[in-house]
Amino acid sequence: MLKKLYLFVFIVISFGFILIKTKTAFETKRPNILFLIADDAGIDFSAYGSSYTETPAFDRIAKEGILFNRAYTPNAKCSPSRSCILTGRNSWQLEAACNHAIYFPPHFKTFPEILAQNGYEVGLTGKGYAPGKALTYDGKPRKLIGESYDHFTLTPQTKYIAKTDYAENFKGFLSQKKDKPWFFWVGFHEPHRAYEYGSGARKGNKKTTAIQKVPNYFPDTDSVRNDFLDYAYEIENADGHVARILKTLEESGQMDNTIIVYTSDHGMPFPRMKGNQYEHSNHIPLAIMWKNGIKTFNRKIEDYVSFIDLAPTFLDAAGINPSSSGMHPITGQNLFKIFNSSKSGQVEESRNFVLVGQERHDFGRPKDVGYPIRGMHKNGMLYLKNYEPDRWPVCNPETGYLNCDGGVTKTFILNQRRYGIEKKYWKLCFGHRPMEELYNVNNDPDCIYNLINNVKYTSLASQLKKEMEKKLKAQGDLRMQGYGHIYEEYPNAEIIGFYERFIKGEKITTAWVEDTDYETGMIDDY
Image 1: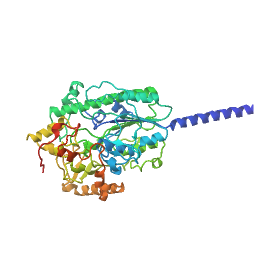
Image 2: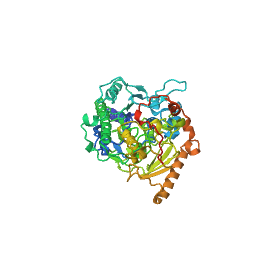
Image 3: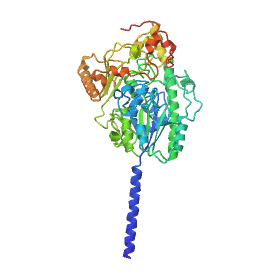
Image 4: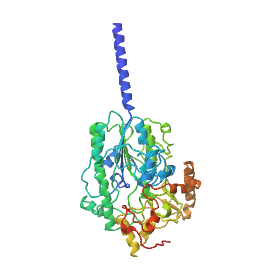
């Protein structure tokens, strides 16, 4: 009888141990990671209060996860912004990858490459790292984000929306993967220009009156408002794919153990937004859902977070130590303190700033030079320093202001100046800028009123500059060491010497701007 009792107790204890071990294994199972990134979308999502864009999929992720109100890219241009995401480093720490459309340095490993080396299935659909070229040391093509899944296409809603069926391609990836954790990058081509003019109103049933406010650096006209609606229609198209992707994920039973990140690479493809470093340039949408990993859902966070914080978050979630991963030292900090908190608002007191900046974006200036900027957002203020204020900030007028995509709004502003109707919008969007700028972003998100010469802000501006430069020096920024010219010496991967070749009469295609964007006479805006 006693032997039977001992046997029973042994069985119960053993079974309990198995249950505990099984539960622990489940809880520590490495998560899948789904990364959804729009191309050129600002924070015009309904979760942020947009009055003319409906994004139920984004809103769902925010409601069932976390909405970040102060998320920023360090560099508001496609290639350098994506470089920051992939490496966890600020763009001035990435040599050539600080610039747009370059040869990605072979010695900088990306977090998808590290995930793949550590047992993850990795893939993407749509736009990954682009524009630019990624090669190995021996000149072979390098896949920074894994294999492409672009087999499925569809008939787009407008002639400029991509034919890529992002949702179906994700479904295809999911059906082929083995019993391993996975990372998948969904890179929408929307809402990158060009747009089918009037599609927002005609096909999306949108009204210009739904737009509550046009930024103060744009004229408030029907054509500008329609440009906004066409942009919003493309965001909604991408969001529709996200809804389908979430449905596929739910049906697969993998929703709870998947980190879902939904964002955009930078602000809108409009003048004074994309390709600059103002509030509307770098401020990005960011919603993260992870049912097994976020303690309290439906929170709005006021901490400043940066794209460079994503790579360490993903690696730590996957059980990979970033410092021994083989990547260059990561500057960003993981988001786990926010995930593990129940608080809304400010969670980490130390997250009260982000750094921003740029070197060369698009070509279009003599000798292929850039427009170097460094800046810091802190506690609702934005300090900017323009290191070469004598240069044209959006590239030279005679080469079409190539660092601003062509479109209805750009054309309208250029024509206002040309025909002597109005010059103030042109000056704000395309004119020369002072060496220093200071804005109260809380009161002036359009960054119109430069406070740098206001004596009330002299001390604050000095403090922000000093703190910014100290942080940049600690990060090895060459411009802080007097070697900023090195950033400009890295060659463009597409065209070299554009300005000089154009001035000599060579016809070079620049499809992202209109032919009418090129100025035919000299311009003096001083």
